[in-house]
Image 1 (cartoon, rainbow, N blue to C red):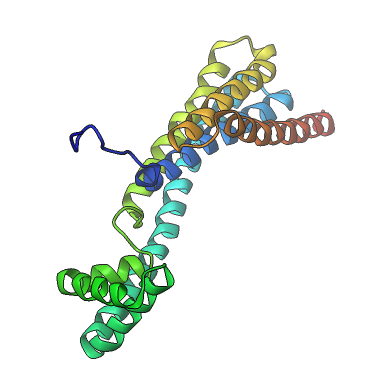
Image 2: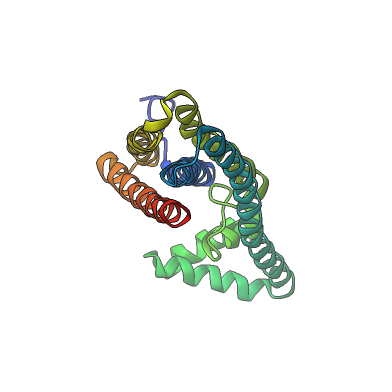
Length: 233
């Protein structure tokens, strides 16, 4: 069998962008739909509903980008600090680091002699890479990328947020709340199933999980909108 035919695709390679994309699209859809439903439930007209929704889209996209960048940057800073410390230890106490790597492989099931041999060979090839991967759990596959996470989150938030805005602009004003809510639940089920599928998880479970929390968010904002509308009226 050729190497190409035996190639494997692992979901862990998608963790960085998939997490940000699913989170961004889901938040954009839920938050904007909830905002539209809440403002509509208060008895506002279509212009007010669309303005509120558009403002929510812009503010949400920027918030997602900033939040993801800060969060992932903190992870990156921690990783870089660990790498710097490991680099210093490899330079100052190479034998102790070799012993440490050996103990790691013994703990994973290798006998002492083989563990030592593996540790020596990996150290000769790429000592820092071996310690980063096997001691610290840092690898290129799962390392943090702040800019990527920020851009993906903002873009997917905007894509998700556009859906309820388009619906609110097209349907009869009296039916905005009902149609936006129903369409959002359908979109959330598709999004949840798609995200779960791409990530290698159960489609039904992912769809139910996302739809439930989206329905709860819209119900809460609709209740606030109706209460506000009755109070003001």
